[in-house]
Length: 287
Image 1 (spheres, rainbow, N blue to C red):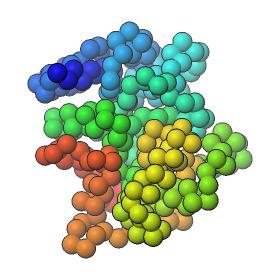
Image 2 (cartoon, one colour):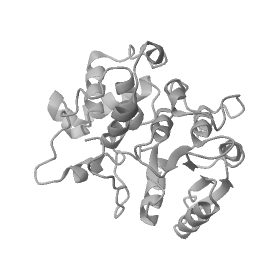
Image 3 (tube, rainbow, N blue to C red):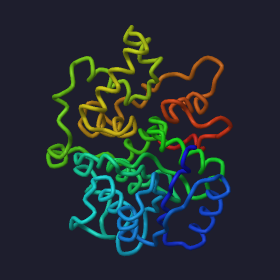
Image 4 (cartoon, rainbow, N blue to C red):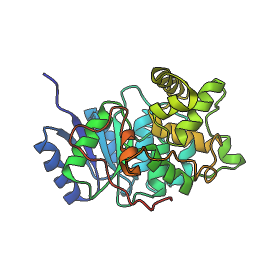
């Protein structure tokens, strides 16, 4: 018998935690602990070892961004900035490999185009959810990231990147070196950052789709990335793809299908569970 998913709720609002606990419990998902700030979340992860953490961004004492960094780096005892930590320090955080047994982190936020959200994704979070998410979206998102998939469509991530990415001589030094990648892998990463699916990559490069999947897997392994969301961020922050340069380079929607539907293909490698709907975002954002 498959063991139920184990989730930790980190939010300073009691009503939010209570509501989420009821929703998850009704769907057979265990809430193993609750935290009212980032420090409590880090300690609770060490104690309970959940599969997924639902992490609020803005909390007292230690914010969700710093807590995410510590949890995913497995450095919960390390010293660092607390709640004052902002998004500006996110770039170097992603260079620390995530602990093998680290849980998946989903960021909870009120705003989708939020610099803290972008920083949390850079630090290794698997995606984000708006706090007005439906019960079906919440449970589907948790199950999606637990399987190892990223929650966000890269097109959504690129909107965050275009809004918040900064490249200068200081931050560039903090980014991963792309030297381990072969010329073909660099080409794949660049196209991946533009939002192409595996099928579109295969067509563009005249390769079999299985070969494309192999290239993507090698890119993630070489750069120590968890998923495609981080790959998109790295491609922009290293300068492989420039924010603003490819504004018109998004692949056209497949014939007869709206862009929002096509983007849904990116909700994890295998898609959200049957019947679940991806989180909806205003179409004008970042366009």
